[in-house]
Length: 79
Image (cartoon, rainbow, N blue to C red; front, side, top):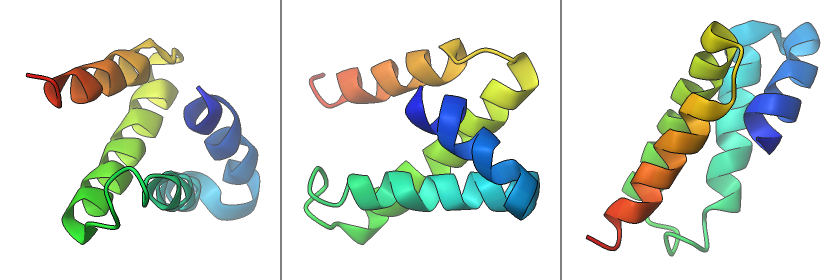
């Protein structure tokens, strides 16, 4: 909820919607560097997911699509 609920909306005034989504995605990717052992491809996927999740949150006015998507992605690592 931190990125879609706080980071992206607070940056939207300064950077515009697209800029806020990209910046939020970049921060999300940086925070996942250790999770993915700095694997560039995985970081790109994390950034892309964050942008999609932010767009879903804006469109649906709910954080649930992003939360469910993140849950599915995390669970996929155990399957």
